[in-house]
Length: 88
Image (cartoon, rainbow, N blue to C red):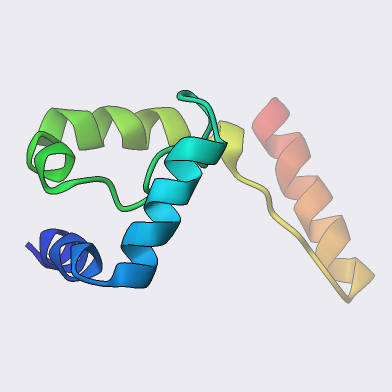
């Protein structure tokens, strides 16, 4: 409901409406800037739990995770040791 409220508020903001119209004219369909990032009330209402679960499965997980270590090299050695354990 919060996102739908945000879309409805944006629909009443002339700057947002003008920007959305300009992007639809400037960028071809299929280009990421052609679409309004919040979506529409209809598109938000059409999202199901299964849609969210599928998106989460595709976008989140070990294959898309980056770990950054900064600082003490002893920590890096511990990390390397843990990685070797996982590979066994």
